[in-house]
Image 1: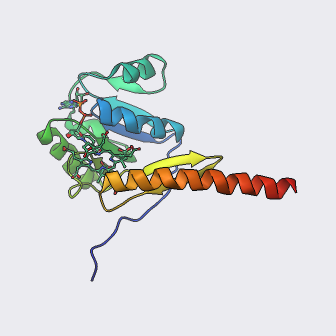
Image 2: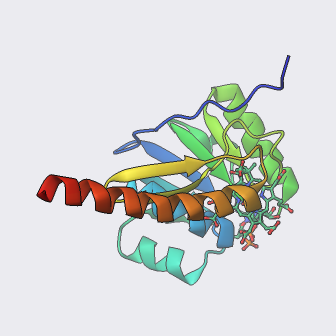
Length: 162
Ligand SMILES: C[C@@]1(CC(=O)O)c2cc3[nH]c(cc4nc(cc5[nH]c(cc(n2)[C@H]1CCC(=O)O)[C@@](C)(CC(=O)O)[C@@H]5CCC(=O)O)C(CC(=O)O)=C4CCC(=O)O)c(CCC(=O)O)c3CC(=O)O
Ligand SMILES: NC(=O)C1=CN([C@@H]2O[C@H](COP(=O)(O)OP(=O)(O)OC[C@H]3O[C@@H](n4cnc5c(N)ncnc54)[C@H](O)[C@@H]3O)[C@@H](O)[C@H]2O)C=CC1
């Protein structure tokens, strides 16, 4: 049998608690989509990028300024861990597994229970691309799909106007 593939889903996270451990470049990139989804986000990290600090100051998320502690995942629906401390990444993903919460682990695709697709939105239509962990390929294909979507949506509009 072929290796299992991830099950693509559209998580509706509005008002639901999402815990992000780590507040560096990778966490920041992923936060914007979580904010668009309306998630209630707690970011846990001793240091955060300036944009994450601004989101905290603006009340768009809560930044807890310390290292991860074992109780931090309580009541979360979704977890994302992206620190450079592999012991911490391991601890978070093990705890998420115990609590049956899907967890993106940025440093080890095989240990992750969820993967982040390369995604985009054009006029209310979303695309998400996974390429078996080959993020260069998923990004490239996403960019091509966006160009195609712009054309499709343009022709839908022309059809409606005709
Ligand atoms: C499995 C997955 C799980 C997950 O993390 O969700 C995963 C895993 C890993 N990525 C690594 C590295 C990098 N990934 C990127 C970029 C992206 N990575 C994304 C998704 C995914 N990455 C999931 C697979 C999805 C799929 O099937 O395609 C994208 C699509 C979405 C997003 O991140 O938003 C986004 C591009 C889209 C965009 O640009 O929009 C960059 C470039 C950069 O950061 O600038 C680098 C830097 C190095 C380089 O360039 O190669 C490492 C090694 C880490 C280490 O060395 O420790 C691992 C760990 C491993 O593979 O085991
Ligand atoms: N999956 C992906 O797409 C990618 C994954 N990576 C990997 O993701 C990880 C993070 O990379 P960057 O964001 O570039 O790192 P970074 O150094 O910019 O940020 C790391 C963050 O983790 C926090 N941190 C460190 N120890 C912590 C702890 N014990 N508890 C809570 N927070 C803690 C730091 O305060 C900081 O906010 C690395 O392992 C890197 O190799 C890197 C690029 C892309």
